[in-house]
Image (cartoon, rainbow, N blue to C red; front, top):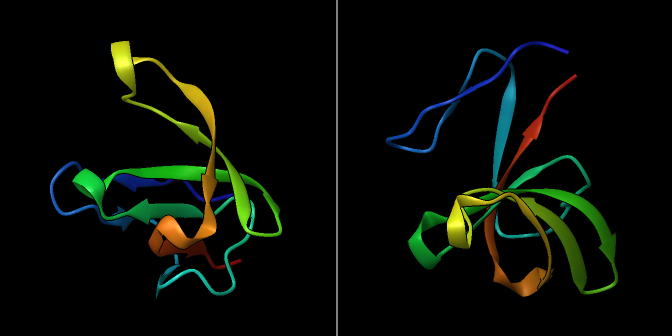
Length: 82
């Protein structure tokens, strides 16, 4: 896999072919999803019907945690193109 660099300001992914998709249709495990609140983004690890499992950084206490979210929270996502 190509190396990736996520820019702090602007939320862009550099260094590989990435497709930005608005909405949540076509979301897959491994995608970097974004919700509206604070432009928070995270990695999708699993999708089950209308629920997704995620790995999230910068959570309370600056920890990395897993979480379950509703797919409807997703406003956009980034998908790496092979």
